[in-house]
Length: 291
Image (cartoon, rainbow, N blue to C red; front, top):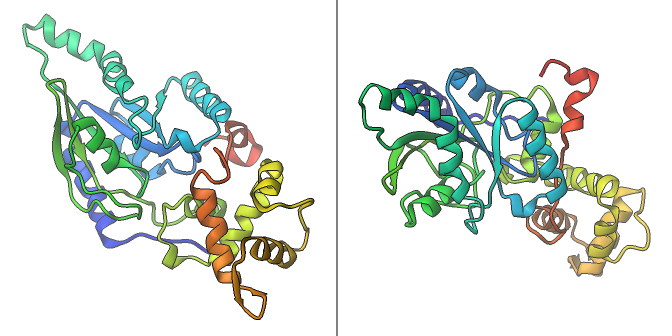
């Protein structure tokens, strides 16, 4: 399955982000804590490389806590500032302003030395679709300013939002990149909901999800679907899950379409428990050297 998705509004968003960079002090790069590497758009690096940056690992409640700690250590070791947050519940958000002040301390100290009273920090939020930008903004602003929706492509234009007296945010539409060099990156994005389901082969995605769970979280897979062992044959595995959950098409036959949808839906939610689909060590393999 080849996954590509680059709507016209994303090309426009890239131009707008580039144009607005001069207006902001810092970039808030929002990534999915379950896939901190795959949800980082390399095109963003090209656009904002010279700007101070704070990486926000969102949806940390859905991610494996121990693996999130590994990712935070990974970024820290590379001189990158990162914090884990849950914009839905609001946890970790109180760290954003203090981390921003720390990152921008030198800049604002220079302003004070020139007799300039520091103004509110101006930040631009960037990230791929459906990573939670609008939810984060609404939480920080304590009101529903940005449109939200559990599907990619909700935010289509830029807008400024004031967060108290010390922070101003510039929201931007989510931007995916035109082509995934590594198709597994596309699969991880699809499994976590960053790509519209209508563009995907749900069966192939469900198989990918099941094989990942079998390799990394086998006990959770067994517990969720009452499996004594995990069948090697994928059709048998679908049949076992479908029969256990009563996902039938009639005459006692399993509905494979609905079973695939069930598996993907439950992986995206907390039904399987907190799950992380990639770890920093994977970036250190020879084929990823120099990334």
